[in-house]
Image (cartoon, rainbow, N blue to C red; front, side, top):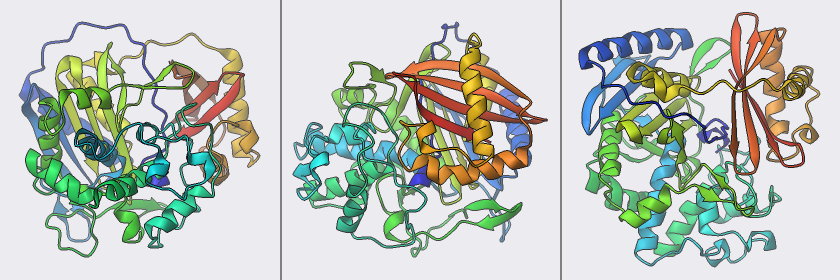
Length: 463
C-alpha cells in the first residue's frame, strides 16, 4: 500500500491565468510527443509506456511506445493492460458515491458503523474523511507484509494497532490504509465486493471493456509485465499476495483504451449525478476551516490559472497518471511498466508541448532560512542522522522507513552544490516548498512542508 503511489503532497498552485493558446497542429504535436517520449524513455530506462491526449472529446494521440514484455519482445499498444496504482482511488470513490446515491451509505456515516469493534480513537472518523485522507489513520509502511493473504478482519486489526497521526479532520495525510478500509466498508454496506460494483456500475456502462481488479491467475490478454531496476539491472516486479492485489487503494488492470472511455464518461458526467460529481471535486475542508486541494480520489488544484483534476499511481513495477485541464478541455493519460518512471516529467512534458502555460509556475522569492533548514535535513539524511523528530508531523512510520533510502541515494549523488526554491504554495494549514537540488550534474526535487508552529510536516526527495 505504501507503494500504490509514491508519497506526494498536493499543493494548490497560485498561478496567473494566461490566455489559452490555439490548439497546436495535430501532426506537428504528435511528432513532438513521439520525440519527447522516446527520449525520456531512454533517459529513464523505461521498457514501455502508453500515452493518450484527448482535446474537446477528440482523440489527438493514443499510442504505445516500447515493450510491454521485454522477455517476449511484445510491443505496447493502446490495448496493453497496465496496473493502476492509486489512479484506482478515483474509481473506489465513484463506487462509494454510487452507494451514497442509492441510500446504502452516507458520507457522514462513522467508520464504526461498519467496523463496530474498531478502537475508540476511530469513533470520530467518517467515510468522508477516509475518502479525503483526513482520517488520521496512518499509511502502512514498508515493514508491512504484502506477501501475506490477510482476511478483512486481520487487515483492520493491523491498521487499528497504529496510533492516529492526528485528530480526524485536522490534517491531510495520504493513507492507502483508508482506501483499503473503504473497500471493506463497501462490501459490508452492500454485500458485494467493490470490484463487482465497479464492473456493473462503472466499467460496463462506460465501455471500459478490459478494466477489472487484478488477478495473477486469470488469463488476461495483452497484460504487460511490470519492471523495476535493482542494482542497475532490470528485474520483474516482486510478488504480492492475492489479497493485497485486490484491495480498494489501487488494484486495477486497465488499458489506455479503458482510460479514454473513463475520460469520456467523466467529461460527460456519467455514472454519477451532477451533485455527486460536484462533491467528488470539492477540496476537503479541515477542522481549521481551511481547505486542502484533494477531493474524493482526485487532486484538485490549478494549472495555468485554470482548474486541474488529476491523480497518479505506482504499484508492482507500474506507474500511471491521469490529468484533466478543465480550462483547455484537455486530458493527458500516461501508463508505464516501470517503477522508476517519473510520471510528472512525462505528463508535464506533454502538457508543455500543448501549451507551456499549463506547467508555468511563478518563481517564488528565495527564503534563505527555509533553504538552510532543508540543507540541514539533506545532510542529516545523508549521514543517517535524520530522525522522526526532525519532521514531527510526518506519518509516524515515514521517516524510519524512508531514511535508509535517503542515505543510499544521497551518498550516491555526492555533494549538494546548489539549492533553488522553485515553488511555494499553501494547502490546508501548511506551507509547501519545492526545491531544485543540484548534486553536480544531477537534479533532484526536494519537497518540504511546514505546519503552524514551524513544525515540519513533510520532507521528501524525488530522484
